[in-house]
Length: 153
Image 1 (cartoon, rainbow, N blue to C red):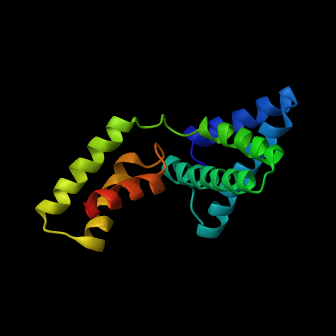
Image 2: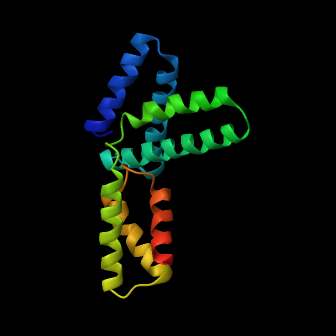
């Protein structure tokens, strides 16, 4: 694993073990297992960007679980998933502000329109550009919904 983010995760696991924090420990161990799985599957040494992608995927899974448990009326599971999501967020970059997201969307839309792109091609180009700028800092599904809404106008 790469030195930066992977070592932070390893240190967090050690401190969770010392503190006997079972929720934090199990969440971080699942994260480490996902990173190791990527290493084995792709036979690569994941860098910080690849690890961030794994963390984002795990955070997205937690958000989806929170929604499902809330709809099913399972508040104890919602609380557990929210606690795990909060732990994962510690390793993600600071979230982008709404103004920053709106500015990035506007810039990407202007570039796509300057190229004459419309419909699905425009969405793909805009989302590709936004992902490189905003990945890990905002829920990309929400950004996609905003882009689709703007293109529908």
